[in-house]
Length: 77
Image (tube, rainbow, N blue to C red; front, side, top):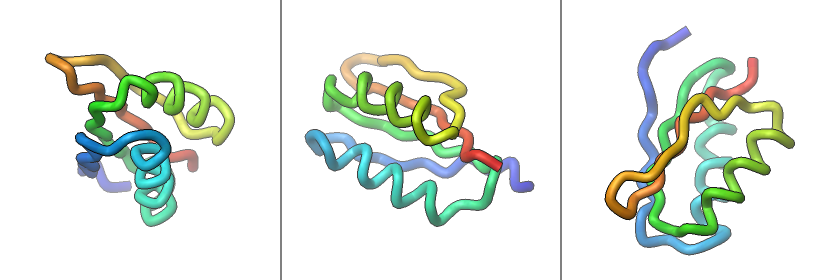
């Protein structure tokens, strides 16, 4: 398992693009790898919460820093 965290910058994109791009990135990753998503769409907060609960991926961390939302997602095994 790689400890490297992949970064996906989707700032400036509006719903549903941040989530769609994150899903695509996760599909290209191996199980248990970690993806950090940066977004500016306030709607992404709910989107990523629901997505991780329904998909089986783990939302390790999320928050907001000066108008940029971030999500740290570990892909399911």
